[in-house]
Length: 192
Image (tube, rainbow, N blue to C red; front, top):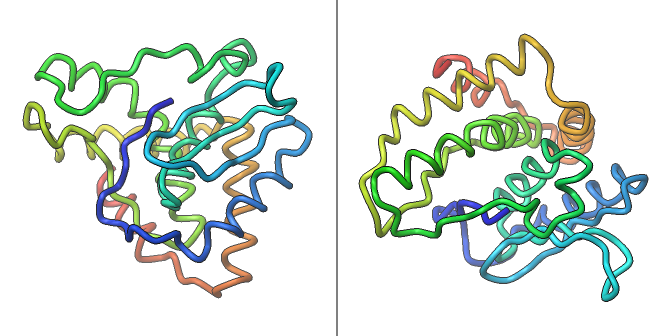
C-alpha cells in the first residue's frame, strides 16, 4: 500500500532501521514475508516468479514508513496478501477534498496500528494526511478518528499480527534503549 511519508524525519537512514528490519523478519519468518528498505515509493509485493518471498517495501529508510507499511500488512487478509499493494487503489498527493476524505477513511485503521507500533518502539507518533499539494485536510479531525480507533483496539484487542509485532517492538526497543514511552502513551490516550 502506498503510504504517507512522514516528512519530518531525517533523509538519512535511521540507525534503528536495521534492527527494525531484522525484528520484523524474525518475528514473521513463518509468513514468508520480509521487510525491505526501498527508495521513494513503498509497495507490497507478493512472492512470485522473481522472488520466492513476500516483500513489504518501505520508503527511504524512514522508520515510520516501515511501521506504516507493516500496519497495512497486519490488517490485510490472506487473499489481499497475494495481490500487489493488497489490490488497493491509491490516489497520490494532490487529492481534492472528496479524494482526501476517501483516503483518510481507509487510513484510520493502519495509522491506529502504526501509532501503537510507534509507542512500542518508544517514539512519538504523528498522523499523516499525505496531501501536501491538494485540498487542505482536517488534520485535527483525522487525528481524533485515528485516536478513537486506537482506543478501540486497546479495549477490544489488536489484530493478531499487530499484537505480535507490538510485543516484539516493546521487548526489543525497551531492551535496546530503556525507553520511557509514558509520554507518547499519554498523547494517544488524551487524543482519544
